[in-house]
Length: 93
Image 1 (cartoon, rainbow, N blue to C red):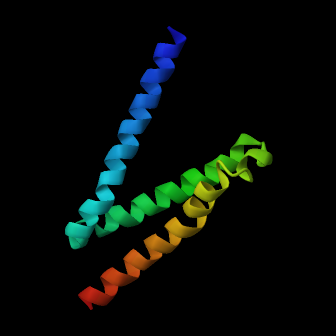
Image 2: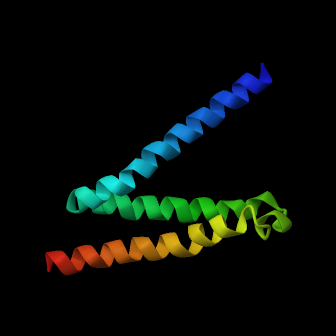
């Protein structure tokens, strides 16, 4: 039963991430309508990356399994969100 419950939670989280991931290409098609959503999505991923530090085991964060994702989450996503916000201002001004 415990494995079934965990599996169910993993499927839910996977579905949430799939939905959020589909927002990114939709933003390429409907940028003006989804601009604020894309910025918020970028911030959410950055916050999730920072939440990894709450695990307490820094050796996991520096390993090859997590480090590339962590760098993307806490560096690339805020830069993407900033770029999206600047791009909108430039096209509307």
